[in-house]
Image (cartoon, rainbow, N blue to C red; front, side, top):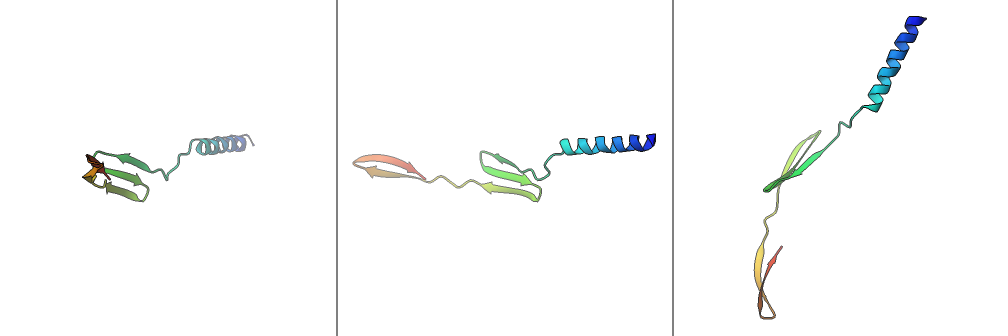
Length: 69
């Protein structure tokens, strides 16, 4: 009976530890760089280039204005 209680206590302690200290395996990490942005997750990684900034000079009420989109 004593060995049964020791085994039961060990299994209970192990189960409690695994429940409390478990981490999420589906984490996704994303980062932004100077040239491109990327994300890495459980199913692989993705790298995306940032779109180019387009600037135009426009005359508004006689004043030259630079507009970027």
